Amino acid sequence: MSDAEDIHLVAVADFPSRIDAEIAHSALEASGIESFVSGDDAGGVQPGLWMKGVKLLVREDDAARALEVLDSNA
Image 1 (cartoon, rainbow, N blue to C red):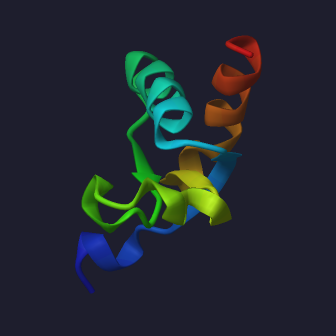
Image 2 (cartoon, rainbow, N blue to C red):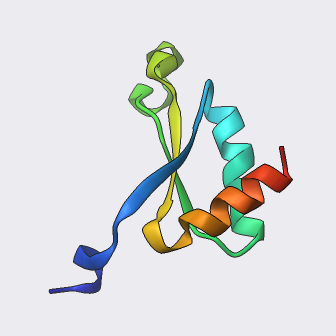
């Protein structure tokens, strides 16, 4: 089993726009937590697809610390 198969991502927050998610992503990255923004917007061409929200994902092991960082930046 490779390392990639051992990684489990969890959503730590939902945002109404990619911009808001990217700001939170930056806060996590500045704290040393790798994160990923996930939102279906057809590569930015159809931002209206954000209606379902934009998720911020982190590794399961980093979730608790990520939530602390996001709460302190709220």
